Image (cartoon, rainbow, N blue to C red):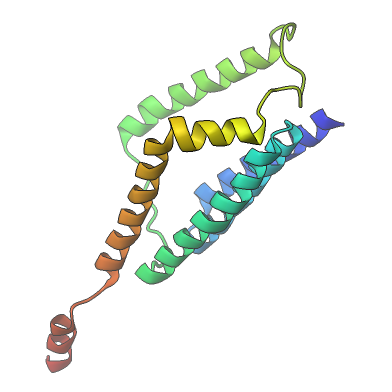
Length: 171
């Protein structure tokens, strides 16, 4: 049953990611990303990582996505302009995608002896907290500062000086 649920939510995650890429409006893309984050949280639950699943929902599907939607609304982004892509992207992207697909299929077909069963991986929340807030505290804080800088940059880009608006009114 776990394998069936894992596969179903894996397909939901992939479908949400494909939908994210195909959407023309940024808000719809952000909502598709929420679906991907939710499906990943269920995947973590099925793997027995309840703490990581809760963090996935609270931090990514909750807080980060609210920030994304806020920045999109602040910038008043409209429909995205579609292009056909560059030749380099087609020449390198297609063989790269094919190679990764073959590698994933090969890994799934291989003999599964010696692998850890689902839900049997170690990862007590206290151990994760010890790693996150002691050993990896600096990268954790740098990431939060980078997100804050990105939001401040979006606010600066969205803000129009009053002199520019007054000049447009006078003309």
